[in-house]
Length: 347
Image (tube, rainbow, N blue to C red; front, top):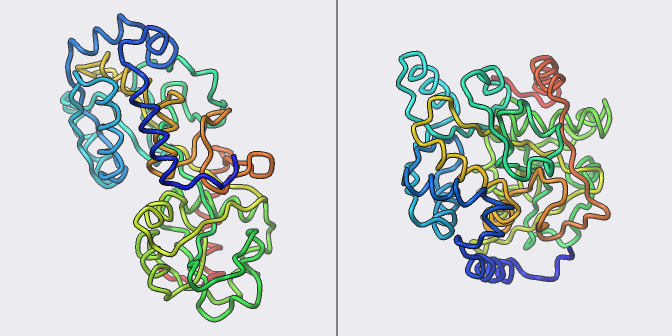
């Protein structure tokens, strides 16, 4: 895909796609969402309870799109920050009162440790997802986030093209922003990529430009819009939302690779609405569901053959990078401490 079509054009095309496909289509139901029997059983249940640590506004858009496809199923969303959500799940499960029909979380390591809590599940297109995007056969990468270089297009006329460009002396003097390594799994994924792919000395070279450090991507994106920083690594979906709002931000996917972090989503064994839960998971993992999340939310996808590419993504050049899960867990503490020292960050 080239970057000629505008984001707005993509939205129009997606709306046409959703309108053109009917929930009653047997071909769609069998291939993408499940059998007609599953759809009928899900509609009979009529609801599901969805626990998520993701941004509420994004999930509300997904639920709305799901209900355009399956209007007879109400999705009750329970949203909480990552740590609070895990505490709630563990507490409810221990008391035998877990209300969730689907659980979604960015900390795949934590959910992998709780894999026994989830039922066996695989979507109809399971073979389309590479094994390294799953931490358990029961947990699936419904949401996939990827890193890009975001920059203020009103202030930078010769934007960076590679990750190594962020080490250039011309960016010295508080022009580059960085989300701190301890902020969470998404940033740790990027830090791990930088060290393993760009080289052991990359962080030393990059820290030398004197970065501005931020606790998360939201305040960094606000600073970028205001021109307080000019550029920096950013989760693409964060930059995408600013672009949708008309902010002077553009993003580049560097050819050295795009580090991605897949969430882990599963259906608890205690789900009271298991058919509706399967249908919800099936649709989100389908090509249609993933295309919606890419086009509307700025996400990437873990699908082997993406149905759609973000603006500026040339599949002949740009490749995703997925961390080795064992190394992701094993190296975390030591490498994050190394990053903190290199960048002068004190917790």
